[in-house]
Length: 115
Image (cartoon, rainbow, N blue to C red; front, side, top):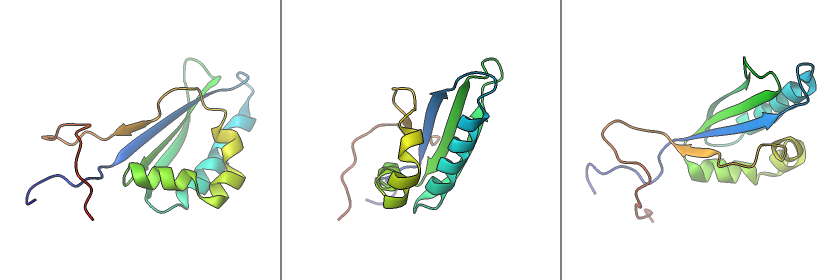
């Protein structure tokens, strides 16, 4: 399949959280700790914790992964379950993983897995 796109494309994960308000630094600390655990997982590329400038109760945990499989495997890793699941479980209930747009390629196309 010369010239074809690899099955797994990079994934951007956006998880939003609603804290208690302006003084909720505890949530920020817990998100940073969760990011540190995720950052030790295979396939992790980079990540950041942020706070909304207009609504200080709204936080974001953004991470980038080599692919959806790497992200999903990271979530099932033992240390992530033990150290980060409680915090990650507080995320707003919405889709979180996005395929990264690569110029010239269509998104969300079905591709056969290489064996």
